[in-house]
Amino acid sequence: VDFAKRTALAMDGAGRRPGVELLAQIFHIVCHGNFPASIQNWYSSNRFVAFHKDYETNPDKLRPIDCGTGLRRIVCGHVNRQNTARFASIMAPSQCAIGVPGGMDMVVHTTMLSLHEYVTRTQEQFSRHQFPTRVQLLLDLEKMFTRVSRKRIRSILAEHFPHLLHLFDLNSGHVTRSYFRTPDGAWNFIEQEEGLAQGCPL
Image 1 (spheres, rainbow, N blue to C red):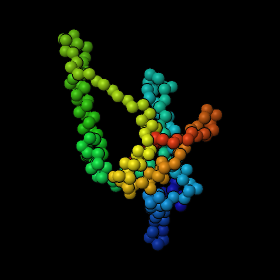
Image 2: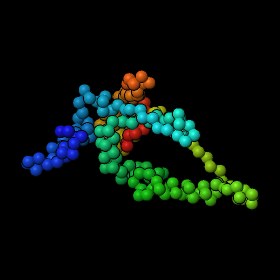
Image 3: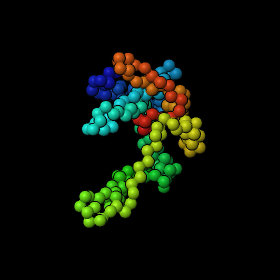
Image 4: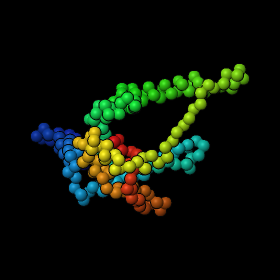
């Protein structure tokens, strides 16, 4: 099946969609942990993608993001959506991102309104002695994704989401590889024993 062509998802003479059925079989294999060991490293590996942090003032300043394979992202995204209600029931009420309709928008807009009301001031307001009444504190957890303990994550899954253990073991139950391109165009990799891929939906 050639997925680069739209015909891969078309019906055949028997009224079947071979491309769709093949994708369903692949997802079923991955989600149930029946993945061939010969391609497990490929599936669980990541690729470094460089994004500009501040292109306007410093175009040379890049931020590498460790992204998983497309298949892994699709499967994990599907599993994430299927388990949203369970995730929310465990993490509520200390978060607003998972299982809360419009939760992230609410947090962003509430924060922006608070900054406008209490922190942000124009030069004219300063001249009228209308000073800020709050302080904005930004906290950045450096390398949070790459430093989190896989052992701790697995223990939490075993307690609350045991049905996801096989998928976690497939993704992060072993030393994974993060590939990057060197200046001469060759590919190399570093091994990652702890932490998670930033681009993984789970």
